[in-house]
Length: 190
Image (cartoon, rainbow, N blue to C red; front, side):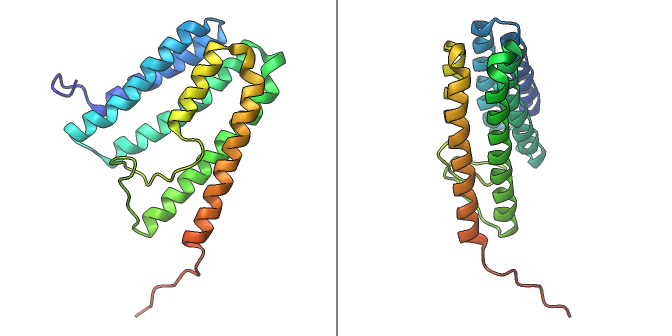
């Protein structure tokens, strides 16, 4: 793909389009096709980083990737809420709230890690500092596959997965307190 001149950012946007298409397809009741589009979306999400490393990795590319990922992660549950609002709306709202909280704890930690010049390659070369948690990207995709294969499980599975997202976010906050809890030293003024 890189040799063909396809940029990492273009692949990121194709992945997002496939992911949004998956959510729309799920919302119309074609969950199997939605699963296929979702898997293609995640393939593109994996390829964009490889293309960036092989060509030209940029901070903007990392920013675009995480932003598109967050939109994708919100769109899939929304597709299930639209598919069956009577059964899925409350569970979907709980799940999306847990995603929002988990995402804020993730990005907040990354900002503080950057401020403290922390670096890690434990999860490969990334534009942002990635902290671990109970639930990460692979677990989320596994959850999405589960609910695509058994849509009737959306509500109960969303409550369980959402609760684990809350646990992940709280554990990250506790880690941040441990790592960044010391008083901030103001720079000496000359």
